[in-house]
Amino acid sequence: MAKAKFQKVTKAIIPAAGLGTRFLPATKAMPKEMLTVVAKPIIQYAVEEAYAAGIREFIFITGRGKAVMENHFDHPYELADTLRKKGKLAELKLVESVLPADAKVYYTRQGQPLGLGHAVGCAAGITQEEPFAVLLPDDIIDTSQGNPLKEMLAIYNETGKSVVMAEEVAPDRTNQYGILDLGGTGIKNNRARVKTFVEKPEPKKAPSNLAIVGRYVLTGRHMAQLAKTKPGRGGEIQLTDAMIEVCKKEGFTGYLHNGLRFDCGDKVGFQMANLYFALQDPYIAGRLQPFLHQMAERHDRRQALREDEIKRRKTKSKK
Ligand code: UTP
Image (cartoon, rainbow, N blue to C red):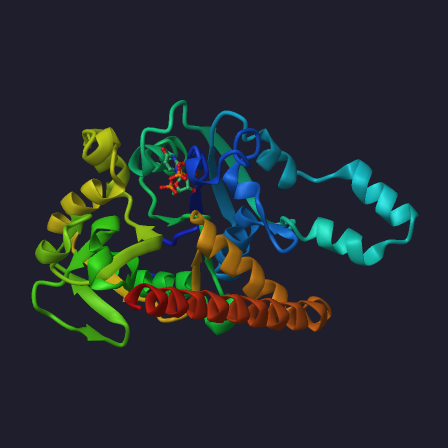
């Protein structure tokens, strides 16, 4: 068998130490990453995606109040035993498949939420000089349409360069993302050569509307770079700042994702993900779909009544 040209990526970092302020009060005592989308915690979707892409070592960056996450990925002897004794084998399978037997887990704590770059840097002692993947658990991908991390690992294995997932965003939303500057080159086979990145540019100054979203394959050099990176925008250590420096030395590939992605760090994206994945389950869909139609009709009726009322008031004030 031909020897791989570049060091294999075996580890994925999953940062989960953020405060989740957009979900307060739910996240007062419960980590955002443990909120459920249908019957699975958000974070489990990222683990399943990475496992399916070939990752076998998972590094969770956790913080205060996140112990429940460690329990979720632990082997639950008592629960498994009870389910077995009760003959609840389907449930037992669900519990045991949370973390496949050949997966290895590391936990490391980020003392203070000092930004995504800082969170990733907390894993430096585990990844050492190795390349690694990063998955932001907030972003849930519908992998039934393809596994982007698998594609990104294939690109890394071919080029030896870091790869970042990108998506086209509305031009007026560039100031919410790290944006790719392709320096005038185009996208071919969903791949683009990145010249540099610009962190949250105002729409007028944005070099493109291709935004960095949730998945990265990064070369080992990033850890040393992160250690040197000073706090940037918002006083946080930005992962994008370290990527800009590594890009100057090694180059970077952008992977354009066209499938469905749900931003579960945001209340709207979270509700959409719940509805989408619930509708994939025939049992739930059978009861949920008629309810959704009913709600939509009721909403339309209310809207029509509101519009009628506005028209009525306007004609009255003209008289
Ligand atoms: P977000 O930018 O969504 O921040 O983090 P947040 O704190 O979780 O949420 P809000 O904005 O207050 O509602 C994206 C991912 O990076 C992790 C988060 O846990 C989340 O998975 N993160 C962020 C860290 O691990 N540490 C940090 O310092 C910041």
